Length: 118
Image 1 (spheres, one colour):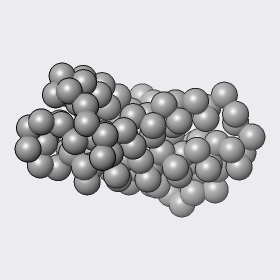
Image 2 (image 1 turned 60 degrees about the vertical axis):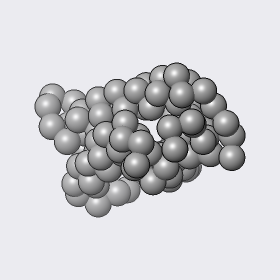
Image 3 (image 1 turned 135 degrees about the horizontal axis):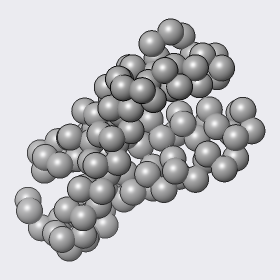
């Protein structure tokens, strides 16, 4: 376990929460949902996979904000980011590897951290 100050844990949690809820919402609905659907189709995923991923991102983003759910949510978000890394690497979209690396790294740090709230 990594011991982080409470303020650092909350800063990472808020950042991850905002980032994942925003990106998840863009996959579930709105003007950008169509573009996400096209991307997922080009990558070979089944119809509506972007909505499932978006829903998990929203739930994970909300989960990291709740101390009792933080570790499970960060583990799920880390797994999603591994999938994103694999997808982008497989399709030679190397500039798109950076966001999943950063977000996945922060999710991993969140999973491994042990703040003083417990």
